[in-house]
Structure formats: structure tokens, C-alpha cells
Image (cartoon, rainbow, N blue to C red; front, side, top):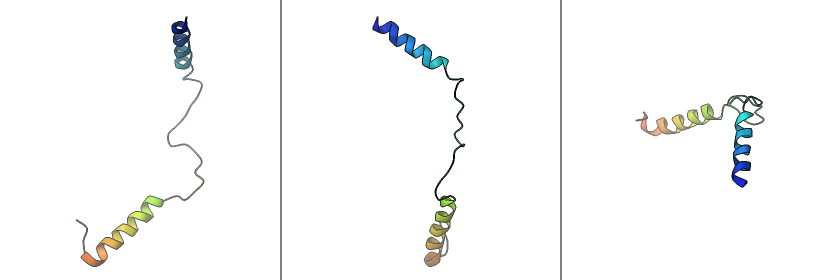
Length: 55
């Protein structure tokens, strides 16, 4: 009986995938943005000052 209930739960969960639409890039960002570009510039500036180039 528990196998039947488990199967029924799996089927119900698989059947409701059309009810929710999610997108990996949608969302409200409530914090700092453009952090990677700022940190990349900081790293490049700290590496190129004493040595001249990044290898």
C-alpha cells in the first residue's frame, strides 16, 4: 500500500510541472550589483602595478 501511495505522489508531482514557470535569470535583486566587474578591475590593478603584466 505504501508503494502505491509513493507512486501516486511521484505521478502527482511530475504532473504539475506546467503550473509553475520559473526562469533562472528572473528575480528581484536587492543588494549590490556589478560586483564581479568591480572586483575584476581591483584584481587587475593590484596585479599589474608591481609586475607590469598578468600571465
